[in-house]
Length: 291
Ligand code: R5P
Image 1 (cartoon, rainbow, N blue to C red):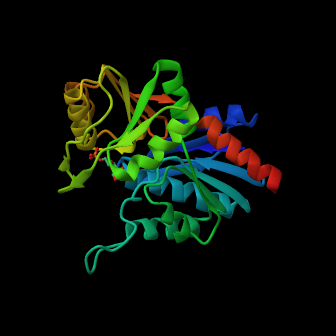
Image 2: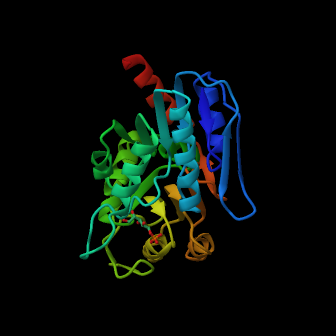
Image 3: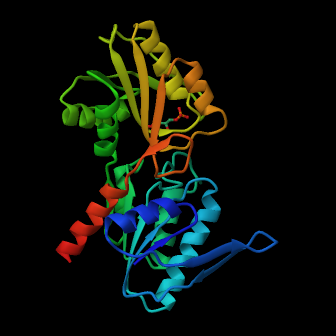
């Protein structure tokens, strides 16, 4: 049985479809003062999959997830596999300055305390987040789904990582599609500002695909688009796993020369056109077989 939280309703339905399973009806709403109400309305069996992304509004989506998990535990459900397609607070996994909250660790502990038996997420910002859990935690890759999109929409692409941290994603896609990849050097000046160094790239007259895990303010991609335009790429396609897209990020990216922007449905957005449902379902099915 699959339970979809309010941030991942369609994805939960798609995962249920892929797994030939049923969706459990729930009621989730806000009281007039803003507090959340939750009721699990179905006849829940012992093996439940909960799907809830914890992107914006992060605190509300997390609270709803905690209410779902704890309520299931109180209903004596013992196996609660928890799919968190986008893991909010995942970017603060260590203390950089004295006294800073390690938010990712606090969130992991709360998810575990609320009752998750295991956690599945997509392209966590840091693989190390899995180690912050004392329950099995899996970091799945959405790159095969993005590669499929690129294969069907771009001829003879060259895959570009907008920074060294994204090179692994670009290489994963390049390996699937048997094409070239390269990366740019980026320095983050502040949460809103990044600088990308000029570099010689072999993209003249070619279709370039920029791949990143997250697009937040869009600054990273805007800089990459500028460099690819200077190098006369004939088309610029932008792909990401998590389209966070703060404010007018999408508009800035198109203004910088992107011809197409695509993201996955780990988060709802205007560009969430690639589904991770079958990748998640495959991982859950594999776990079924192992269990
Ligand atoms: C950074 O390490 C990430 O991979 C992304 O490049 C970053 O989160 C994107 O942020 P923004 O869109 O604000 O430049």
